[in-house]
Amino acid sequence: MVLLVQYLMPLLEKVAKKYKSKNVVVETGTFRGDGVQNYLNWGFQKVVSFEIQPDLFHAASKRFQNNPQVSLYLGDSALALKELLAGSSLTEPAIFFLDAHCSAGETGASELFDEEQVLRNEMLAIKNHSVKNHTILIDDMRGFQKANIEKIVKDIFPDYLISYEDGHQKKDVLAAYPAHEFLQLKLRGAALLPVRVFKAIKRRL
Ligand SMILES: C[S@@+](CC[C@H](N)C(=O)[O-])C[C@H]1O[C@@H](n2cnc3c(N)ncnc32)[C@H](O)[C@@H]1O
Image (cartoon, rainbow, N blue to C red; front, side):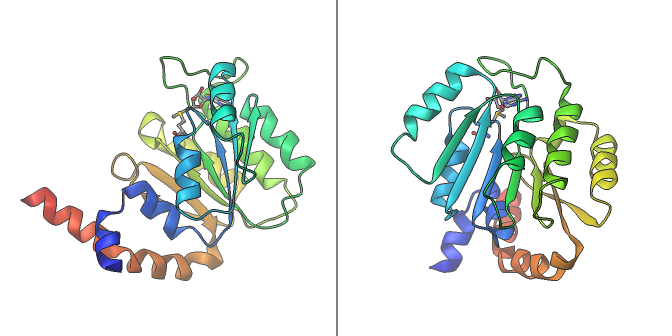
């Protein structure tokens, strides 16, 4: 049964589960809140999310208004994450899922920073937080110059390791994490291996 569940697991869920030694996920880019709902479904105890577009923020706030596990904020994550973390009660390592990208349609974008600078600011805010072993997942890497983003990550987190995970597309999620977690993550990844094998077989059929 466990194996069957793993076979059917969507790829982003696999990433979240692999890196889920943490209880808290902080997401930038709420959109409609589907990600927030997913993190709750996947067992995270607390979900924090930022959205820059007011209509999306208000709709998502309504969606989760009765859920004390969810905290939503309106603002540019390039600035707001720093503010939140500076005064936050977060005392444990968390997953930061950086997904605040302009996606056309009704979505918004920072008026002050380009997307690389948004990521840089978000990561600086995380780096300066009192907890020093957060995990960073950057979604939609296909939309970025990979080398530029890796350089930003390495400049800000020289002691972190970087790897790529499958998200909406193959190797689309950059994961950056403390080097000492390498073995633990390898083991977790191996435990989730059946998902990859099954998908590979399916592709060949
Ligand atoms: C790719 S969507 C996020 C999808 C969402 N995380 C999910 O899993 O369903 C990107 C969202 O980020 C928002 N956004 C873009 N730039 C932002 C910024 N600087 N700060 C906060 N939100 C931002 C957009 O308005 C859009 O709703």
